Amino acid sequence: MIGLLQDLLAPFYLQLKFIHLLAVMVWVWSTSVAYAYYLVPVFKAWRRNPGDEGVIELRNWVMERFDHGASYEHIAFPIVLLTGPLLYIAGGWSTSAAWLTLKILIIVGVFLPIEICDYYISHLGGNKRRIRETGDMVRYEQAIHRHWWFFLVTSGPVMVFAMAVIYLAVTKPI
Amino acid sequence: MDGTQSAQERDERVAAGASREFSGNPARYMRLSILISTVIHVYLILGMIVFEFVIHEQTWIFGWKPIVFTLVFYVLFTRMIYRWMMRLDAQYGSGRGWTLKRRTVSLPDTTKPH
Image (cartoon, rainbow over all chains, first blue to last red):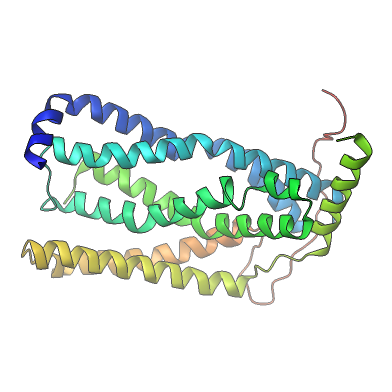
């Protein structure tokens, strides 16, 4: 089965790689400007001025827009997850390549849980616009706080390990 | 939805925001940084041992270079994510005796048409 799939996919290895790389670029960078220059400054303003009504209103607006803006990232990530294993099969790779093993471990153990959580808080049960439409403002505030916790906890590891994954893929050092 | 209702909803949202305090603080960030870094490193080390040593019988994973690299990276990574949390949450300083200082900020007026 794997052999047959390898025969079928091998001629398209470079095309698959192109799609994979394109999806990785979108996944890694698509939210970066909105995050660094729109969301974070407003949230920092809120943390310094937690009772300021103008800042809270702007914080709520920017958070709802960011939920929506994460769509590009969350369309690209499943493409990365799909094309990665296809490349693995098409290229005849195995876990004997240590750089690939480490890369897979990072994707599965670090990024997959983070992204599952991100899907939920951005588009599913934690989507701020939908919560606002229910009229439950206490839950709305809880959702904003939870999302800020998510950013505090994950953005450091995401930056380091996203660069690590790209470095491993490009240089194949081990 | 009419304008009055919308303004009322907005006021409720703002009131809910002003009344609830965020639960993050430097001590929690420190504990979380150590926990997150430890969990990630233990997971990656065990995963590499399983694939490299158990499956492929490679012993390089137990050499001094991977061990030193991992230990140094663990310390630097823990420190980096702690400092990152502190800076991201507009909290500077060592964490001990720290207080969040109020600052005046100037943000765009979203009520006026552009």
